[in-house]
Structure formats: structure tokens, C-alpha cells
Amino acid sequence: MDTAIQRHIEDHLPDYLEDLKRLCRQPSVAAQNLGVKECAQLVQQMLEEIGFSVRILPTRDPRFPVVYAQRAGRSSKQLLFYNHYDVQPAEPLELWESPPFEPTERDGRIYGRGVSDDKGHLVARFAALKAYQAVHGQLPAGVKFCIEGCEEIGSPGFAQFVEEHKDLLKADACIWEGGGVNWAGNPQITLGLKGILYVELQVRSAARDSHSSYATVVPNPAWRLAWALSTLKDRNENILIPGFYDHVRPSTPLELAAVAKMPDEDDQLKQELGIPGFLKGVHGESLRRRHLFEPTCTICGIESGYTGEGSKTVLPATAMVKLDFRLVPDMRPDDILAKLKAHLAAQGFSDVTVNFSDGEGPSRTAMDSPFVKLVSDTARDVYGKEPILVPTMAGSGPMHCVSEGLRVPIASSGIGFPDDKMHAPNENARIDYFLKGILHAAAILEAFGKG
Image (cartoon, helix red, strand yellow):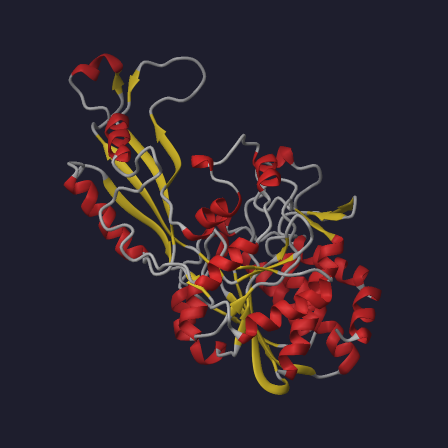
């Protein structure tokens, strides 16, 4: 990459860390509506400080606006950065070694809520733009930012926002919210996300809880729910909803080859998760194929009756379970929701109420896209290691809104490291990879303007 820009970025790293601390001091917890609008205003201010024209635009829910920014460059091409400024709740607070909204440096890392997900990625991009302008003046290509405020609660209304602002968001390519490296320090470039369907199943059998002696004659909703759940999946991890797998798109030869090339990180993952092994004994390439390419049905939480200290002989009146289904191309949340409802009714569980909570479609950029090559080549230059192309992440997000709505290729680049504890206490970002993320963002921008 441009050595003058690299030198400028390295010399000004302390300033960029202060920018990150500044943004992370401002809480922005969408789930609690804590500081969200104030954070949007701070993001606007930070973008205006580097010469962007910025607008705060409402979404379907006015509590969670989108920060939109743009600046012209020498080339007419437009590069879109998608990020989010909201963060996860900091609880449980007692497990933090330093206050979550007082970013703290120690042992080569910076700790605080949002330093990795997603404010560190956002500030790294700001830093790259600052550096390029300081060295060369005008940006090499047009740059746009779409920064939402409710990604951590499922991006409600974001698809509608993109649909209503297609002309404003129009671009030639998009860098997604975050990325990073694997355990060995190889840059990972991710090209997709799974979709998701999130539902609650509820059963009510009586107006109130009753004495457990009535279990002889009063239906137990917890048992009803357990029996209903047992029809969704067998012991071999096969999902039993009729038609569930009908629209699963087969992986391409390029995608399968990419997964075969990915390094085995089974031992690190087992250690990180604290598990002795993986479902069905999978490992290596079979584990990666299963993890990235297969849909899921997951019990996320169950609630019924008494779960406090000691015993209480009670027959509960209600039972509830939260489920998520991770979806792969070409599965759709609305289709799986309809099939779930039809399945439960056919199995005799019409008394089980299905409440929709959230849904996102899957997304995957073609591995032979020229933009993917650009991001990969610049990563190799910056990191000095061979990039790992990952066809999709196992998680979900609103990527499909952009890839389908704007018809653009999407790839990831960022500051992440596998043990950055996103969503958990002591979330952190390694300062050395924060620097690498800035350098890569600058290299992408430079190459994009030339291409």
C-alpha cells in the first residue's frame, strides 16, 4: 500500500485510539434504548469533522435513526460502508474487570462495550479516511456510510429503510460491518451471512398456576411444549418440519474449495467454548461445512413454572420457548414460519401459539467477484499473510437488505480477533489488529479508486 499513508496511520495511532474511546464512552444500547440518539449525534459530529455531508434519517422506529454520510472522490465510483453504532447490553456488570463505558487500555488491548462490535470497525474506517485526506487531500473514490442504530435487536425496519433510500445508498460495492483475523493472524474475508427466523412458542392451560396434585386432571403446558418441541428435530439433528430443506441452495464448487482450504481451528474453538467435542463427532472440513452451510433449529430459552431456590409443588399455567432457525440461501423466514405453523397443527398442537419475533434473509456474494479479489489482494499486502476466504458466517444480520436491495457485492474487513468477547463482559480489541484494520481500510479505498 501507499507508504506515506501507512506511515501517517502508524504515527497517528494514539489519536485514533482516543477517537475510539470517545465513541465508546457514549452508551448506545438499543435493547434498553440507552443513549442511542445521543450516539447517532456523536457519530454525525465525528463524520462532519472529516469533511462528510451527514444526515440523520428516521426509520420505522424513530428511536433508532440511521446515520447517512457521503463524500465525493476523484473517481465516480462509490464505496459503501455498512456499520452500526448500537451495542449489546453490558450486563452482567459484576463480571467486567473495568467499567464497560469507560474504555481502558491494558496488555495491548482496549476494553469496553462496543470496542469490537461495532464501534472499533467504524472508527478504523474513519481513521483510514482521515489519513488518506491528510496525505492526498481528495479521496480516491466516492464514499458513503450507512450506520444503523438497532442491529443488535434485529434491525427492525432496516429493509424498509433501504428500499425507500435506494437512490441515496446506490453504490458499486460494500464493505460490511466487521471482519478480522483467525487465531493464526490470517485475515478472514467473509462474503455472506445466514438468515434467521426467531419465534416464541407459548402454551396456556389454565387461568393461573395450581397445586401440582391437580396434574392428574389438568394439562401441564410444560409437557405440552416439550412434546411439541420433540416433533421439530430428531436425535440425529435432522429437522423434521416437512419441506424445511426444500429450498436449500447447494454450495458451489468454489465455496466448497474455500472451506477445504480454511485452517482447522477445532482445538481453539473447543477450548474457547469449554466443550469436549462437537455434535455428531464432526471435525475439520466436515465441521466447517456443517457450521457454515447447514440450517439450524435451536432452543434459545425455556420458561415455565417455578425455578427458584428450594421446592415448590406447582402445576404451571403457562410455558414458553424461544427458538431460532438459521437459514441458508435460498430459504426465506416467511416460508419457514408458515411451515412451522402447519407442522405443529398437523401434529395436534394447535394449542401452541407461534409468535413471530424477527426474521432476516440469507446473503452470499459470489466468490469470483472482482471486488472479492480486490479485498483479498489488499489484505495479503497489509497483513503479510494469505487471506482466508469464508463464503459465509454462521451468524445473521441485515446483509441481504443491501446485497439484494442495492445489487452490490459485499465483503468484510475489520479489526476483530477470535477472543474479543463480543456480546460478553470484557469485550476487547487488540490494538495491533485495530491498526491493521485501519491500514486495510485505507488500502481497499486506494485500490477501489484505481480499479
